[in-house]
Each structure stands twice: as C-alpha cells, then as structure tokens.
Image 1 (spheres, rainbow, N blue to C red):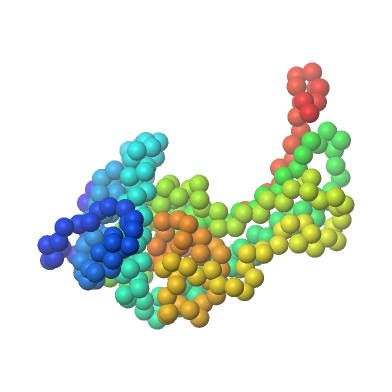
Image 2: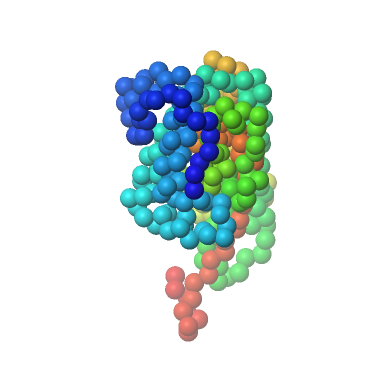
Length: 279
C-alpha cells in the first residue's frame, strides 16, 4: 500500500522518531510547512508498512494481526505520537477561520454529548431505584460512556484543508481506533449502587454521583489547544482528553464524524447448578 501525497522537493532527513524532550520539539517546529507535510507522508508510509491497509475490508487479517504484536503496537503508537505533534504544529501555523469554527462546533458537540451521557445515567439510576427488585439480585451496575468511533470511511470527514496537511486521515483514524482503544472514554459515568445509603427517585444527579463536575466553566486548554487563536473557546474535558491524553491531533479531531454515547444497566445474579447462591 502506497501513501500518495505531494512529492518531496526538500531533501531533508526524516526525523521518524518519538517526540521526547524540547530539542526534538524545537527541531520539528524549525521545519517549514512543506517539510512538515513531507514528514507526515513519510511517517504514515512507515505506519502502513506495519499495519497494512485498515480499510481493505476484503483483506482484514493482515491489519488485525499486527494489533496482537506488542512490539509492533508500541512502534505504531510511538509513530502516531510523532505524527500527532507534526500535525498539531501544522495546525498552529495554518489555523484558518473555518478550522477554528469547526473546532468550536466539535467542542460544543462533545460537551453536549458528555452532559447527555451523565443525564441519561442519572435517569437510568432513578429507574433502577423505582423498579421492582428480585430477591436473588446480587448487584446492579450502571455505566455510561462517550467514545469516538470509526465504523466506515464515512466516519471521517473530507475537508478543504486535507491537501495542506498531507495526511491520509481516513486510514489513520482506523488505526487510531486500535492503538487508542483502551483510552477512548471521553466521559465515563460509573455510580456505585452500594455507595448510596438511602435511595429515592427524587435524588439529584449529584447525589447519585452522576454529575458532570469536570466541565465547570473552566477551560481544559492544554498542549496544542493552548493557542492564542483558540483562547475564546472554553475547552471541554472530552476535547482535552482526545487532544492531550491520546494520539489524536487537532486536524484528526476536526474530521471525526462518529461518536457513541452508551448507558447500560447490568443486573447480576450468581448461582451454581444446585441453585445455591454463590454469594
């Protein structure tokens, strides 16, 4: 699989290493936009040499095989971290009005989805309090989460600035879905049934431990999000998590088109073959 992009007219040595320390970051920042774009194309070629094509649905086995190889996974994660820093550097140099408006839109959407996840978790908790209980029920678990998803190529938007960055955003999104899958919770609501002493459907979200206390009006702008052109945005925790705790660059986030909010109730009963309680 070959990654296409603008041909390299700058004969520089690709850095191709994880970004650690101020010297490495300064070295990347010293490159001009064309050189940075070449770096993106080069590093993505190396990533795809390991992962193979993640959206070739007729030949998924080679793509899935690398995920179980710890050494290959760590190598891809390191290169994804390097790619993220380059793309965030390009964004800082570019950063059009259209991109700023789209980032505001994504931030508002993530905040709304986060609040909905907390709210629906609280609603389900109240429904659990009110519903009849079985004497054999051992425990109840309510869990709400918000995650980005990559299901199809339509999960990634095509934007006017794609050519500027030189990234194969769709294939990289599919790979990031694998490398970041244990970090993908943008909101995680997990109230404990045993932590509430007296249950009542009239209890507040806060009393049920289903309140979004992370988004209190203070901006979570850190790292690449700490940009003078973005200082008017009150960055929500979900956007902060994507951009700071994971290997998604701001240009990646601008192209995300699928998010899933899921709230579920698990009722547990334990028994053996003789119908004796195991707890």
